[in-house]
Length: 320
Ligand SMILES: [Zn+2]
Image (cartoon, rainbow, N blue to C red; front, side):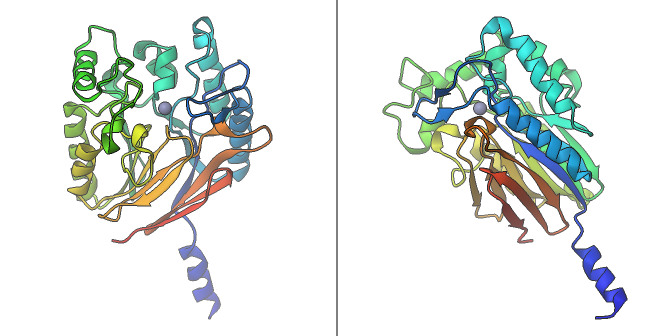
């Protein structure tokens, strides 16, 4: 190999750009506890995981931005402490030397109303929306979805989106506690109150963004707090209308990777259209001293997640 070839070879391995990633910090200044299924939750330690993530991201020096996949605060956080807790976590994110793109999760909405939450998260979205897109380089576009668009926990009680969500739950979930999947079978178990759906308007917006990305020859990464593929997550964690969202995504070839949180154990799948689905391991479930965060190197033909400790590393090579 001549020195010029070697140089080209090395340049070919350089990512187009890189970004930091973390999910489900779910911090609260309360004693450790357990999930409904008995999985330990380290509510106070999770802020240390976030602090270590930001320190590592800053040390990397070449991260263009960071993405928070949602649920920065836990539902057990005492309500009178919600605002200061959310502000405290956001402050930790702001220690990162670059923009942080946030996504709302159910636990954020248990603590603060959509109206108080969105300005704090400073999303680059118009009209108080919680879905948006951004293009860090000409080759790529990121789409952030709001999985709590149609939801029984995300809007005032008399809001049309709340009423629509309650109707879905009434039809699909026979339990009086709509957070319980008792007696529900297979994929139907996703119709729980802590999940939600992408509304019609947002679906049309998504279609338009993917159309435009295709026109510009861009690769797309879709981010949503709720997972979009049954192969990568438990049935109880899926977006209610993951199938409708994936139908839109599969109309185009531009979406290469879908990232999600919410299903704390993490997961990975490649669907029948070759789209990679990576559900991230939760910062909340890291025993003291351990971590779950990472950074992602983005190339023309693949996306490579380098995870720390409990966050698995994943190489996602595009099929087309
Ligand atoms: Zn969640």
